[in-house]
Image (cartoon, rainbow, N blue to C red; front, side):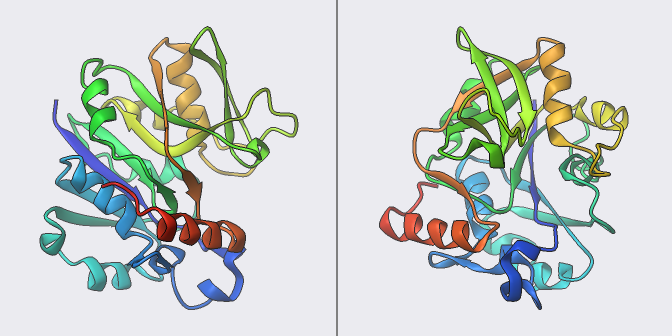
Length: 242
C-alpha cells in the first residue's frame, strides 16, 4: 500500500517564551538545521516522497519560503493550514485528502530522535492494517502519553498521568492505516477542548490493531527551553541518522 508522510508543525510554542514571539518553534535551529528539517529528512531517508506539512495561519508563508515545493529535499511537499489549535488528531484530520487510500506516517515537528525510520517501516509493512506507535523509555513520563505493556503488548495508554504506570513515553511518531480519518471523525473533544491522538491510539488498541516499536537511540521533544537546549546537545554530540 502507498505510504505518505504528514508533518504536524502547528501550535503557538508559548512554552518557548520570547523565542517564538515572531516565529514558529519548528523554524528554530536544532543542530545545523531548522527544527522542521529533522522530520523531513527522516521521512525522505525512509523513502517517503509525498509529504504534507500542517501549520497555523501566522507562519505558513515562512514554511513555504523555506521549503518550497520540496524539490531541494528530494520530495514533493504540499501544505494545509490549521485555522485554530484543536489538538494533534484534529490537525491530522486535515490530511485526509492527502492520505486517501494510503498509510500515513505522522511525525510531530518538534520530535528529535536518532534512529532512522527505514527499518521500522519495513517491519510495519508486513502488518498493513495495524496502527503503530513508537515508544521510548524516559525519566519523566508524566509529561507524555504513557504506554503500559504486559507480556510485550500494549494494554493501555494514558495521557500525561500524574501517577504513570510505567516509563514508556509514546513518541510523536505514528503510522496509521487509511481508516484513521474515520476514527478521528468519531472522536469527541477532551477536557482540554481538543481531539486527542491518545484517543485515536486507544481506539486501535481496543480493536486489537495497535502495534509498537521501541526507539533505541535518543529521543526528545523540543517544545520547552530545557528540551530545546537538550535536543541541540544531543544532535551536536551525535548527529541523527537519516
